[in-house]
Length: 421
Ligand SMILES: Cc1ncc(COP(=O)(O)O)c(C=O)c1O
Image (cartoon, rainbow, N blue to C red):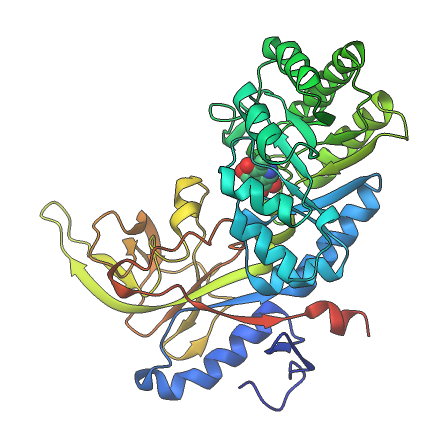
């Protein structure tokens, strides 16, 4: 595949061919290759993932938040190549289940670089963590403390405190996090059970739009450290959770904004002997993946009250494929036409001022909710044209496979290799 040009494969990594071009170059080449044989089974939707984008994000993290060790939240995108690549860069992991822990251990990550960041764990998963020396884990209730005492009394415990997540797209505070007025009781119970509480964690929610949420949470964490000291715990770990935005966000705060506020708050309130980690998910992966799909059907409508036609387009990827959590996030989709009538139009078509029609875009399944966009104005498209959606690396992993439509396969590139030559 993709022979004979400057995005040619450079190596095999974990049994995958890795190209070196940009995502656009790889898409262009892939379409060139498949167009002549679409009906022979080459008309599947596909994803292009750029490991180089992860690499550059990692460098940005190290530059702007040098004190805070990233533990990648694998739930955000457990793609095995992502997990192995970030592991090779020295990133740690936030895991929330036995199979996530197993995947990370299988990637060769040392157990000390994993935090089991789920405050309400299945008992057999705690046993698995104990058997595999994954000792760092969170809790937010006395029940969890008793469970851990029974199964893994030597675990290193991190108290997940509740913080204001009202500025986030995905709010997690309803489900997890100990309110401030319960913290003393939790710490006293942990002391009575002779458990080892070593730190505090928080999570401002995913898709956070206000940097103050991070600073306020660090402030609260300081308060918890002080309460813990009065009960006899000398805490030494602060975990700042996730919620840091990815590259290319359309609106809201940038990672630079978060880093400036969070880094300053941490340095001001916590001495250098406190180890500081975080659990970024979307920061690492969101811009690294682009999903490409193919228009497999079209219906033309002529509403009674209009002389203008409207169009319904059916793609071969949708809500039950790559777009499930993306739609739940209520993030704006920005579908881009990349091939029209067999011509590549990635760069120019979308800005062109041309006749546009009211259109809707649907996924391929029989589920009537499987609709990606309603009432958008699109140029006239046809069966066989291709569309892509950029910034699809975060939380695109919840495909159900409903109706037998499989999640698109990923082609990998690493644009960092070429840019660093
Ligand atoms: C505990 C925890 N940490 C980290 C994350 C990652 O969040 P994000 O992808 O917004 O960085 C999540 C996701 O919701 C989470 O629940």
